[in-house]
Image (cartoon, rainbow, N blue to C red; front, top):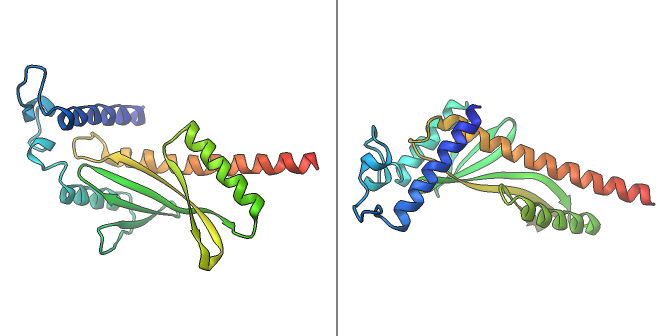
Length: 195
């Protein structure tokens, strides 16, 4: 139930931020004030605090530490971390983050049939449900194609339970990867039975 409430709150905040960015005004042509967005908060996107990249980075680091994740920062401001044994990275933006689930499936480049199946399935799954988006990355020196997933999410202090918000999205990556593995396995099983 908390997950649904958190996702609903995130959707409401996204809608409000979208309206601010699109029009910048209310229906009465009055400029939105902080009381219109968060009545008890002085941190909102109007004063560039909550949507500030540095504030987003701070919130991201704090939340990852609450999840007991060891965070590795690079020179470009990208945070790498492991969650439940899987490798992720987060790129903070202005009030949002892009999360990557890195190299969760690999295929040898010599296996042409599997590469074709994987590409078809990636396209099919991204058309069916675009989030998290599955992509592939070819590492020629290792002779491997890696699968990765990415999603952009709202990430501001106004989200009631930011830790749960992040956990929900991280779990979505695992569900997506498991769905891909199950569907690839089903395809292989069908082909084996047909032979």
